Length: 109
Length: 109
DNA sequence: GAGATACTGAACCTATCGGTTCACTGTCGC
DNA sequence: GCGACAGTGAACCGATAGGTTCAGTATCTC
Image 1: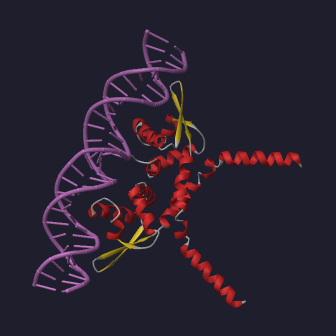
Image 2: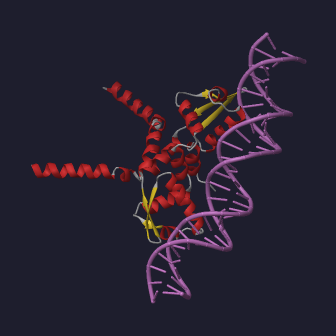
Image 3: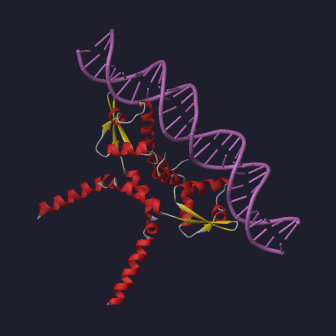
């Protein structure tokens, strides 16, 4: 019963999978080519690809024996939307600082 | 050797922990009070709190036998920063649309 | 058809996750 | 001091994560 947001966040919580996303941002590529830089069996690598697929973060196109992967970043938007609800918290200190300067300026006028 | 980004993303990949964050956004609260709405043992709940602490997302203040939790959203900023690198991908369609209208307007002038 | 290439599936391993129960330690109120 | 309250630690559980190896299936090349 895990939601897609769960799947997406879990998918990007692994550095290998973030690296795959980073690679695919430069353009689509075959599984083997994406896998090459990683010191990992191809089977292990494919498991990461499946996790990314489950999250909807990559799409696979099969032509003959080759599988081309393409980034599909839309699900990240949901994560961004969730996080944006808390932006004001990490901006809080900045806000207070801005408020301080605003008050100071007001006084000096 | 997991990075903090790993810990933060893993922490927010669980709906219970996102709910805790949502609750703490309304203000600090005692562990027991935050735990009450969840149908889960207090011990189990405390494990979630520990995961959030490991990620730096909550801070605990102890006074007597009570533990007050406070949201510390700064780590989410790192997640937001990572995600922002891919914004252009989910905006791509919008960008093309904007480009289309820009070209149309240029033509009509 | 033979051999290389590009994966995939199944079985296995260890570690971690998300949850439980039970026993325990402090701390507060009376 | 005693009982209720707030929370922790340890042990356990089943499921999943992240990795492996090995064997198999298509597919391409020659």
